[in-house]
Image 1 (cartoon, rainbow, N blue to C red):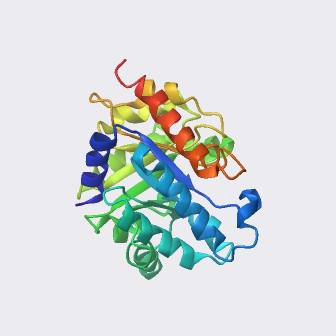
Image 2: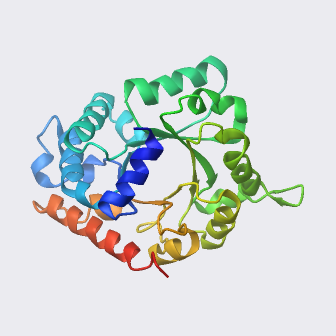
Image 3: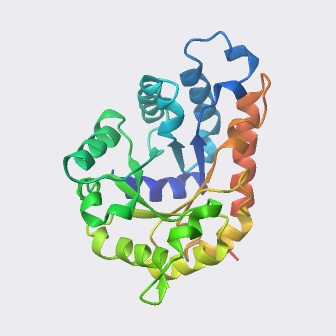
Length: 272
């Protein structure tokens, strides 16, 4: 199945809009991992296994692995998720943005080396920089639109022909760039008004929504602002609040409970 088919099927099968961000920080791991040379893989595997019943996707953040020299752990983690939890798509959070042969290599990295089902990309260099990703019709291309960080307004809100730049990005993503129907957008949970505006522009296009939990985004407001008519359309990402729900030996059980709690919270607002 394509990324979009997997995502829609997962929304249906799991009843969940939750995406667990896998951003390993060994200093926050439970004590049991301190002498484990394979701690990065083992911790993330345990979190994925515990939370899989409650998610529509997983989102490993490449920098958190690369900074630790743990790219091999990331490869194994994606392989484990595909094998143990088939049908749960993996979005590689890489935010790549470059042109020509470099963009082609970044696309190969995401889709061939790591075998991700989708990847986040930065559109600042324009449509040709996205083409190597877009032409992989079976994979998802998740374009940064209105990000969750406080400094997002520095550039993304700049007025261009009478409307903010992020709205132009949304229109391009829903139109010119989406010839293969494999584009989604990143819009932060910290901006509910912008979520509503982007949803009005892009119709039923999936929105990856980071910023719930530790960054202060309101989960209920996200669903009210940007769900589609069928109550889906959202990939609501939470990382730290789930990964580090407990620093003790019950870390996996606590992560599962946090993921289940977020799923249930979002679900209560899907119909109204």
